[in-house]
Amino acid sequence: MMNTTRRLLLRSAASAGLIATAIAAGMLKPGRVLADWDSVAFSATKAADALAAIGASSAASSRDIVVKAPDIAENGAVVPVEVVTTLPDVESIAILGEKNPFPLVALYTLSDFDGFLSTRIKMGQTANVRAVVKAGGKLYTATKEVKVSVGGCG
Amino acid sequence: MAIAMRIRAGNGDIRVLMTHPSENGLRKDAKSGQLIPAHFVRNMSVSVNGKTVLDGQLGGGMSKDPYHAFKVKGMKTGDKVVVTAEDNTGDSGSIETRAS
Image 1: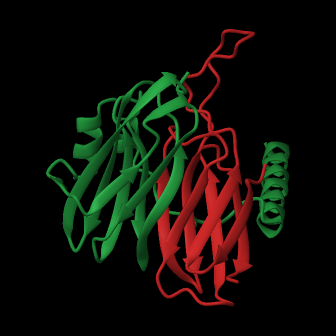
Image 2: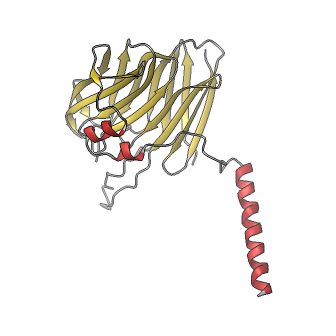
Image 3: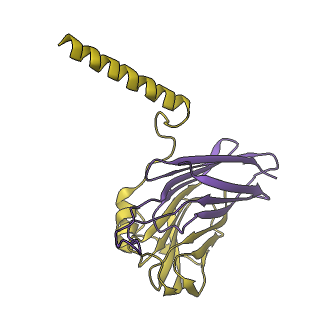
């Protein structure tokens, strides 16, 4: 009995020491540094469900957003997408590949945004790329169709 | 494994390139026929002089080696720009630079 307790104590002391060393070495960080991840929205398999999950079902079409992407993407694994907007007070931007297995690709919360964001996404098949921009508390959206020759989603 | 990144900042523009497989968990290994487990960057954060200007949640639909470029109002030469990223396995990375 005594012996078991001693073993346990030794073991926990050793592991506590290891954890402390790991924190000191920067391998483990106490607490989360970055924001949470919206698993519901990112796991949605339909664009409409993903939009609903991020509260963007009611976004109105806007000519103040331009989604720039190639008309034809030879390789769906790398599709450059730019979102350019003249809307003031942009708070967030979401990018969706509407027919992707998981349509929501990215959701950005922004401050001091100056109207231009560019990234590269995967697309499984010919579909609309949709951008949803929240600006001044309101939701706006625009799309661009991209024809995909070779899908990039597996 | 730390997430490797490259960064450039200047003229109101921040560009970040990460080195990451960005596996969405749906692709099969050509040899074994087994699904390759999901392994993608889920969070990225960019700050200028300590103020967060971009807080991104990302999915497996990001391309391999995720790239971002965006414009920020009011960024000046010498401003400190810090990028941090974390993937779904808990790996993380950070990089900083001064705006040119």
